[in-house]
Length: 138
Figure 1: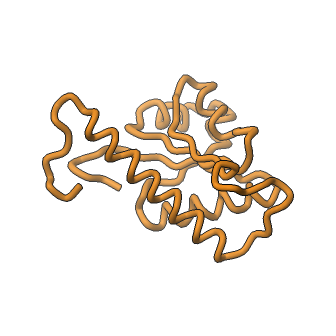
Figure 2: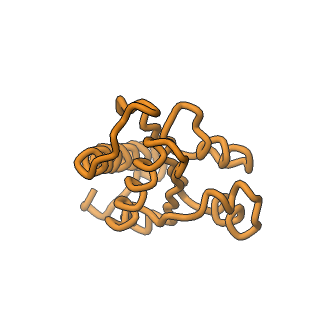
């Protein structure tokens, strides 16, 4: 997603062992395929590998998709001084250990999160003191 040179958007996903971790990972892959952002490695951030840390710190937007309220992806970025935009599947009604992983559910959640990401971007543009985007496509 790059409107008027909107910059680097990185996607980080919980890929935990639980059902909701699987869903979060699959949702992130759909969003990357649809060019909402570029998926990158949360484990690299957690391991404090310099390339991943520098990329996160330099990105215009860091978006995390967590499977459950523990919010490992969000906390991983916060630990390196990055405040991400956080989307937690618990806020979409999914419960760890109680959510069957189906293609229909993955697609539904992906579209909801995509809409929320776009809405959040529009809010950021409206708050921009320079007057926001001038491409007339937003």
